[in-house]
Amino acid sequence: MKDTTRPFSSPMLDGPDRAPSRAMLYAVGFNKEDFSKPQIGIASTWSQVTPCNIHIDKLAIESSKGADAAGGKGVIFNTITISDGISMGTEGMKYSLVSREVIADCIETAVQGQWMDGVVVVGGCDKNMPGGMIGIARMNVPGIYVYGGTIKPGSHKGRDLNIVSVFEAVGEFTMGRMSQEDFKAIEQKAIPGSGSCGGMYSANTMSSAFEAMGMALPYSSTLANEDQVAIDNAAEAARVLVDAVRNNRRPRDIITRKSLENAVSVIMAIGGSTNAVLHFLAIAHAAEVSWTIDDFEKVRQRVPVLCDLKPSGQFLTVDLHRAGGVPQVMKILLNAGLLHGDCMTISGKTIAEVLKDVPDQPPAGQQVIRPIANAMYDQGHLAILKGNLSPEGSVAKITGLKNPAMTGPARVFDSEDDAMAAIMDRKITHGDIVVIRYEGPKGGPGMREMLAPTSALVGQGLGETVGLITDGRFSGGTWGMVVGHVAPEAFVGGLIGLIKEGDSVTIDAHKLLLQLNVPEAEIAERRKTWVQPKPRYNRGVLAKFGRLASTASRGAVTDAFDE
Image (tube, rainbow, N blue to C red):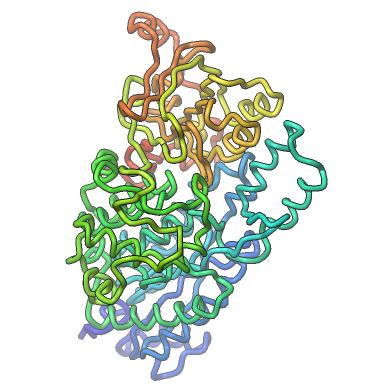
């Protein structure tokens, strides 16, 4: 008979016929009593690949101890990570989005293959976050996310530093606006220890959204990883998960359309990464929740930006934590009627119950979180632009711009590498609109992030006056007149693939417009002569991703077989 407190593991471990299974587990340290406990998988993304994950093993061990203390049996297994910050601007970056899918597949394979009763995902770097949540949502086995924590800032000459400081320093150094001494100092001091990149970039955006969605513990998404509270959170999360297993609280009870609205509302309020659009489309797909790219725009129009956070603002994620963290932001939104308070969380409490004791206003004297009456921007910052260049939608990050609208001549490049070479050779000037294509999910493949070229443009003083559009992605550290996720992408015949050097292109966030200003008759003639290029890869993981990935407007997922 199936044990209802161990719905998945009991068929694998109970009864005389399962003696071989138990024999194998005695060899890894199980004792007789462990077989009657809920089996709690601890998915660890520990690796020496990146500072985001170098400490994850400690947190995974604490989660396993927490599961054991709560009457479960913690079982640690590993999955991969790669570092966006290290691979950025290289061929290696093509594997970044691919790693999201690999992580989700790894977690699903381990948890389902071993029939675990619940899973704690412990992650740090950008794709750990959505990859882990996609896996949790896909399986619908009780799950919780433990964030490895953000990095503390580096410092040089009294200025806080983070990874984007280094990318922007490249542009400044190239222009002769920074000394060799300062350039090397920034390189050496920007990353002082372990943890995820310190601004409201992709990792911190996703961790904040998971907390808002109810799939992580309160205050956990903005912790500095080197603080004891991060270790305590890892243990507590596992204890909460064991309770969720016993009470059959499943991810799809928590990941609903209303909780997705909550997550996206917080993303808008904190000024989060453009990558959140792509990843939440994928999470919604995994959870089988109806959610489209147009839903982001609906949320954007009603939710203001409340937080003054990098890359377009002043402060880092550790500053947000000191100011009250995500719960403080959520309480302001809840009081304004911009959050669904009745959504359930992994703890069994509703959002309103979780926020009950959070002050209505942040601490006096802080400047990170603003009241709604004094918001940074009256509407959200992630705008969905459409037009003939992107009928399926594209994503623009419009915070920090004096005028998010421009028309200019196209400077066309068929890869990020070619565009970066032109930028470093100072061939891009004020008023240009840089077009980087064949970098989409299928064409790249892998949809590289364009932090290197966008940061170089900012460092050269062109962040406000040069536009950039791409069927690739942007880092959470990117800001400026940039539009990504252009769909359909060039590789499948999207209009971005038909732009010619010097064509007039319009980016207008006011009108939500991305337009190629070329007569329809001319476009039709160009379409007749366009030939799809051969795939860049015919073997291995990039080839598989290129053939399986959906359009960016559907999250670039690899299992959309019924759509």
